Length: 303
Image (cartoon, rainbow, N blue to C red; front, side):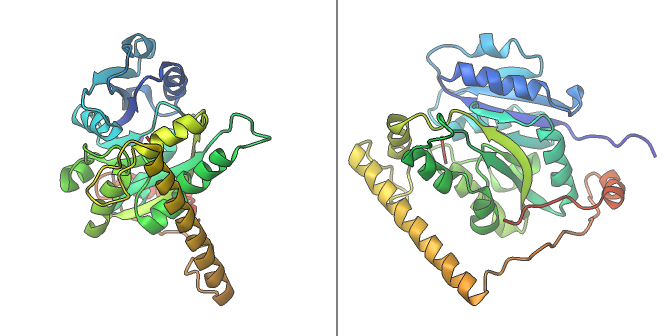
């Protein structure tokens, strides 16, 4: 049996005024175990004060693009338009992908029948790991629960998302007018078509995301989910309302989980693994899956 062909992958990274962490992200993407001729990294500048091209120029796998319309989802759409890959992988400039991130993400994506979205694990880092702040803990609880997002709500945060380009051709791109929540809105457009969602254990480590109260409230002020179809006014009062809403939601989920555990009706499948399917687009992977076994699947918004 000859060498199994690997699909070409386009990694899309939006960035706004974050050159230092972008450099760290691109270094990690440069050192991937996936074949060098099998992927590209598209860095989309979303109107940074200074050009990102001098940073991107240091990394052979990367190329720069530009999107003037404010918003990370508009930037991601620009990356999608210029992508050459059949597989699209999304991460952010403040992320450090594991060295086998692309390889592992593609393997799971190809092994799952009729796969639409693979959401990888998110591992946040704290400024002071021994003393995380209340805001940092809030962020972890509310925004880094990939398992709950993928298996329950049916979306993956774009800090660690794998999919096929033809999925976008089928359901459309991200809603570029959204400043936050576009990953959730897009995922819930994918779900009705019967595509499979999987939360995998591969890691994208998040670094430096939580940088204090000012950045936290700045992001909260840009969320758009308080009133459907309306943008939240940019003031601290609206941000506080969002925090209060999220806190109530958190307590409600905790109470429902408690009741489910008490009645043993969580509905979770313990220790189950998917069958090795025949992949219509890349049939060679069926044989690989048969030999190595099905992928380990964990059952468990930022910018």
